[in-house]
Each structure stands twice: as structure tokens, then as C-alpha cells.
Amino acid sequence: MRVLGVDPGLTRCGVGVVEGVAGRPLTMLGVGVVRTSADAELGHRLVAVERGIEEWLDEHRPEFVAVERVFAQHNVRTVMGTAQASAVAMLCASRRGIPVALHTPSEVKAAVTGSGRADKAQVGAMVTRLLRLDAPPKPADAADALALAICHIWRAPAQNRLQQAVAAHRTLKGRTA
Image (cartoon, rainbow, N blue to C red):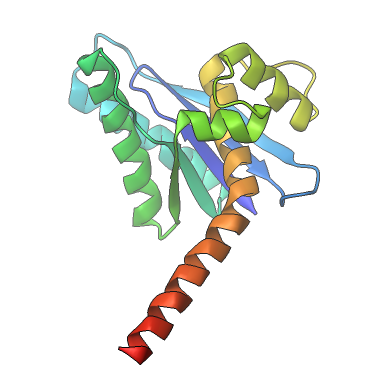
């Protein structure tokens, strides 16, 4: 399974591609950050994020895209920018028919470190260890994108089985009604 992880942001949008399956060693295929200038007009920034995501999709051809689910913060401006960048990533993937999964920050931290309250340094250290890298990816947005991809690879099989069980239950329930 090849997954593009996206840690959305307008100034720095982390992107990372990981390949592998649950229970086996994972391989990092690429990591980086799509940057935009805080001084640029919002529309131009969104187009720059789109172009950057499209380049990653063209180059790496992921089977899935995992995006960090936007969560409430006190800074509405930051949340809006994150949500807008997230929507751009989802749009780019969906336009190509690539399934998109959303994972909360605590889900990603728990999957990668074992604790949903892990800090950025712990996430970076575990990403480094899991992908057998020489050093943690910089900036933290890049490491977070890889963590999202890892989380999806590890969680997708269980989520798929759960979705299949729910669908089977609904089908069975429909027959007895």
C-alpha cells in the first residue's frame, strides 16, 4: 500500500509518501513541505498548495491519501487556513479517484508512538525509527505527514474489516425487515 500523508497548512503543508503493509517494515518514498508566502493573497496560496499536492500525486502515484482531520483551536484564523489546505488536498485526491482518509492528531500520535498525547519530538523520533531514517524529517510538518501515512497503513486493514462488517450487518438486517 502506498500512502501520501498530508499535514495541511497554508504556510507549510507537510507531505510524505510511505509504502508498506501492517506488520512489515515500511519504506519512505519521499518527504517534503509545500510552502506559501504568508504575504500572498489567499487564492494564490491555495493554488500553490494545489500545485504542490498535484506534483506529489503525479510523482508518487499513491493508492490512498491520508489527511489530518482539522480540529478546533482557539485561533480561528489558523483553523481556517488548515481547513482550506485540507480541502485542497482532499479535492486533488478525489479528482483522481484516490480514496481519502481523515485521521485526528491523537489517532496519529497513538498509532505511531503508543500515546495520543505524544509531543512533536516523540512523533519525529518514532517516524525516524519506524522508517529507519538517519534523522527526523524537518520541519515537524514533514514528519507529521509521514506519521499520517504510517497511521493509515496500520489502521486501514482494521477499518476496512469494520466497514465490511457494518455493511454485512445492514444487508442482513435489510433482509429480515
